Image (cartoon, rainbow, N blue to C red; front, top):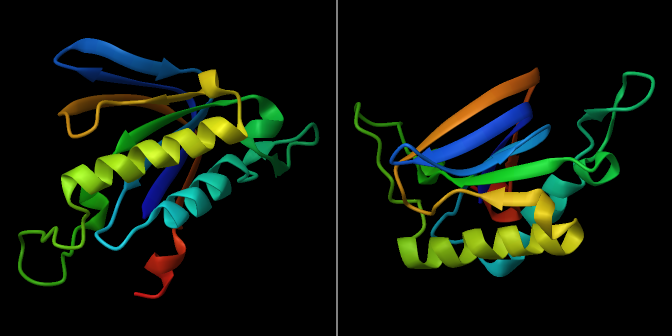
Length: 153
């Protein structure tokens, strides 16, 4: 599993020009599931994400998590993060998870985040839909997190 995490002042997702979800300050998470991922990988990455200390404390130091600040999270499925671009000019997506299993693990990631935070703070897009994402990056602060199995590759 790979997550691109952006600290945002706001973010929203629309499908077919219709609003789906939006957040104020918090985290925009672009999440990709690989063909080798498990529930354990989803839980590891979810826990890492909600506890990631990337918000400023009262002294302006990056020292607080979204749980500490009461921030929101918007999770968007993004299978293209598993693109293999080493050969040619057309990306290969053979490392991305099969859609049915990827949806299960995407939902598991979101569910695990909701268990660790206030459930109304975690919002999502529509899995496999063509989405339009708007965001105002804060900082900018952008990090890439990987589940344990991604570090072995």
